[in-house]
Length: 157
Image 1 (cartoon, rainbow, N blue to C red):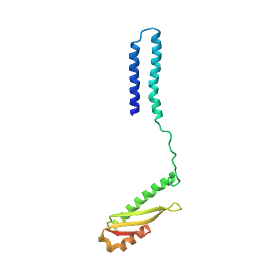
Image 2 (cartoon, helix red, strand yellow; image 1 turned 180 degrees about the horizontal axis):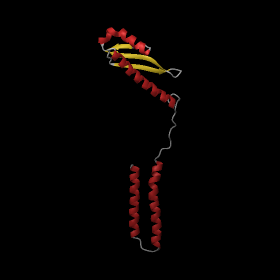
Image 3 (cartoon, rainbow, N blue to C red; image 1 turned 135 degrees about the horizontal axis):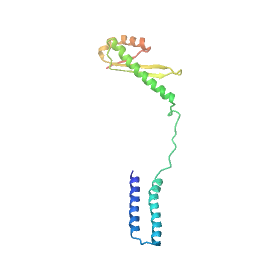
Image 4 (cartoon, rainbow, N blue to C red; image 1 turned 120 degrees about the vertical axis):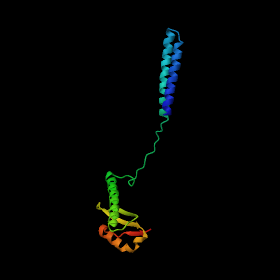
C-alpha cells in the first residue's frame, strides 16, 4: 500500500511541477520544446514507481519439497473425515448406551483405524468415570464388549 501512495505522490508532484513550468513558458517554438520535455518528464514520473515496484519483487523463490507422506489425495482426506465422524458417532453411542444402564461417564475416547481392506476398525476404547462405579467395572466391560466387540480400558477418576 505504501508503494501505491508513493506512486500517486510522485505523479501528482510531477504534474504540478509540469503545469507550473508550462505556465511560465512563452508562446512559440520554445513552448513546443518545453511541452516535449514536460511530456517525457511525466512519462518518467509514471514509469519510475512501476520500475521500483518491479525491482523490489523477489523472484528467487525456493522450490518446495513435497514428500509423499505430506501429500494426501482427496480419497485419503475423505477417508480421514469419515473416520473422524465415525469416531464421534461411536463415542456418543457409547455414552448413550452406558447412560441407558444408569452409568454416567466423564469422558470416553474411541481410537479408530483404517484396515487394508478400507474398513474401519476399533483400535482402543478408553472410558473415564468416577470411583462410584468401581464395583460395576465387569458389567461395564461386558456391555461395551457386546456392543463394540472390544474390551474398554476403564479409568476411575
